[in-house]
Image 1 (cartoon, rainbow, N blue to C red):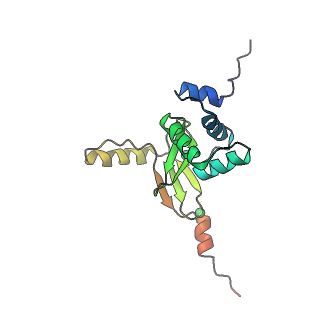
Image 2 (tube, rainbow, N blue to C red; image 1 turned 180 degrees about the vertical axis):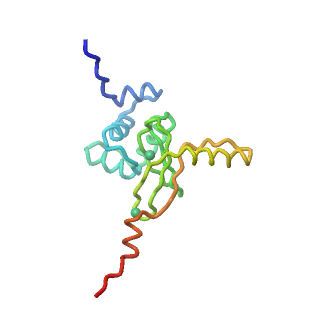
Image 3 (cartoon, helix red, strand yellow; image 1 turned 90 degrees about the vertical axis):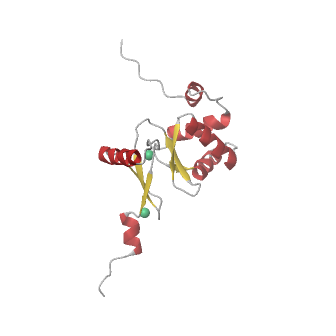
Length: 154
Ligand SMILES: [Zn+2]
Ligand SMILES: [Zn+2]
């Protein structure tokens, strides 16, 4: 008998397994993240895309649902400060982020040496590092080039 291919993850199953009620709004947000290209999305963007698909949901519901999904471990948030976060499907793979402060481009990385250093710094202050994700801010090469275009000779 050929091995059974894993059944596609249904949002409602995942929600129930995570102990959530599985409301239509929760299912819509999770469904979007399950089917979107892996990436990091703002609540506004998720709300816009879901609304565009004909689902009726207001932005505050989107925020509330995202928080519920983060608490349940289905979604990970990337805090960018000033009450602004990006959201991604929680794949269970710990990683950090580098975010361009100009265009918002997000790069993922995981670096064991960086993790060790971070833990050592926390330990030095008698703390245990519990932050799951950290967004380092920078300006990407394209934005740097746009801000400082190379001089062309005339
Ligand atoms: Zn950029
Ligand atoms: Zn990520």
